[in-house]
Amino acid sequence: GESVGLHLPTLSVQEGDNSIINCAYSNSASDYFIWYKQESGKGPQFIIDIRSNMDKRQGQRVTVLLNKTVKHLSLQIAATQPGDSAVYFCAENQAGTALIFGKGTTLSVSS
Amino acid sequence: GAVVSQHPSWVICKSGTSVKIECRSLDFQATTMFWYRQFPKQSLMLMATSNEGSKATYEQGVEKDKFLINHASLTLSTLTVTSAHPEDSSFYICSAPSGGAANEQFFGPGTRLTVL
Image 1 (cartoon, rainbow over the protein chains, first blue to last red):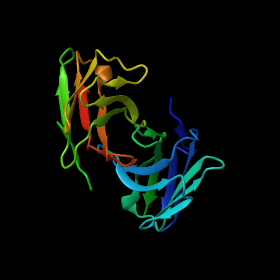
Image 2: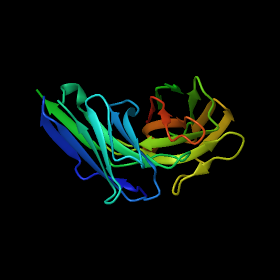
Image 3: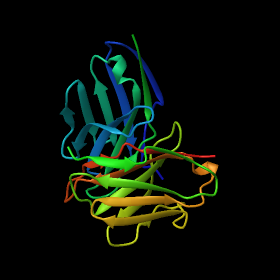
Image 4: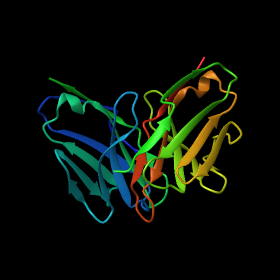
């Protein structure tokens, strides 16, 4: 079964707001975590990743936080835009193994 | 970054027919590829791990005789859905790891299968 889950299935925000999407994982042996964005009818699109030896990583408008103590992962999107509307998945794995995906959070951005 | 392609991007077939989906790594070699299935409004679920030169490894609940996987070369894995039925209609996505000890994986664009 899935070892990665999400706290909320949907998130609605206003354009310009900051969005926070959360994820819980259960496999303490996982050493790599990724956030993907998936638009309707398309494959997952890489957003940002983080390794278990880090607790924060920043990209362009996105930040991933990893709390290994409570096995929690979050994705922060700054100044959310309508184009950010999609389903967001967290995923985890160990080197060379398949990714295990969480259930997904639908982000809806209204202008 | 590395590119993974899938063909076809969508297919509609009659119940009882077989459908082959190709997954190719375009600019790198992949001794392992992963096949996922995604039903509407659900997450990606791992079906099987395709291994070049050896048998695929299937996840629990996935019928190996129904979902035939052939890793023909270091750049090609195929998934054949045999005797397809409407309940097999789904979005099939493959991925390939970047290799070595790295964790990064590259996903194909997916294949939408509709069985009538």
